[in-house]
Length: 118
Image 1 (cartoon, rainbow, N blue to C red):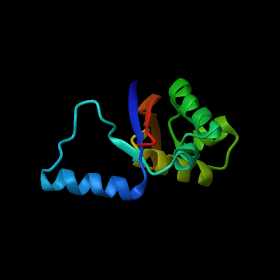
Image 2: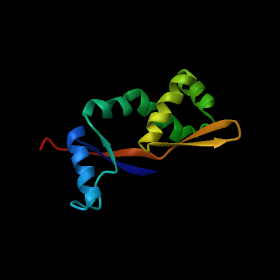
Image 3: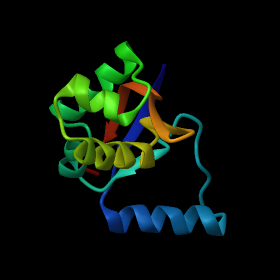
């Protein structure tokens, strides 16, 4: 399992950063976060206590499908599916389609969060 580096930066600042990188005025330094959130609140929604429990279940039990994960967690399949799609967007989980099932795999179980008020 890998450690995912996460950065928190206001949207306007992030957009400036992206434009600077695209125009060649700035380069991405080694070790910089690859995943960015625009606030601690938005990060907290994705890495909530419930979602971290879900991630731990995926890591420990290796469920073969979202339905199996729903049974393990006691949560609704539709709720878990939405949550996992969001987590996949950030590289936290991978959803592998196998025949008629979608198997979740934990891609990160540790997080290094970089945040600066400057």
